[in-house]
Image (cartoon, rainbow, N blue to C red; front, side, top):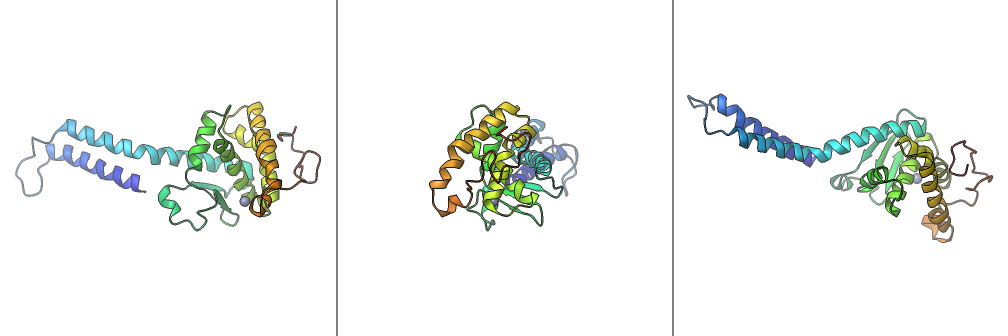
Length: 221
Ligand SMILES: [Zn+2]
């Protein structure tokens, strides 16, 4: 929001600069010949530069929303990327993401959308955080699909890791490798961790076990 306000302010300055070159200011008989087109252009460029970040995120949110609808099989899904300012007003600020089934609203906490963008840009070798970002996105989509139990939600998301990746144009083998990396190296270690972590874990989340949905595009196939 602050970016938009700053951008609009500079756009207004730019407009004013050019406008008064041709139109007299109120109370003046003639236009101001000292108004500079070049200065107006500089102000317009500043305005565009300030708008770049919010426009980029706005487009990314639209793309995430469309993909979340496919993944969750629910057309009410919509995704919001929290800015730092948003986090001050977010009651679930300590969760990396959250989703509300009733409204379809998914919120990814700052800076997880940026990490997901990086994952999509370089999917072959994501950092840990970039890897988690894809799983978090899929996890929240599974809540909108209707699952409330955290361990089941996490397992459903895991099995759809490659499907989620493919929605972003990531090749199937890369998506599966990333999903298996998450499953083998991070998911399994949760079993030994404390209460908070283990609520997202189930020993039944494994090929052929109770939580295996036997999806044709599962990371296990
Ligand atoms: Zn959850």
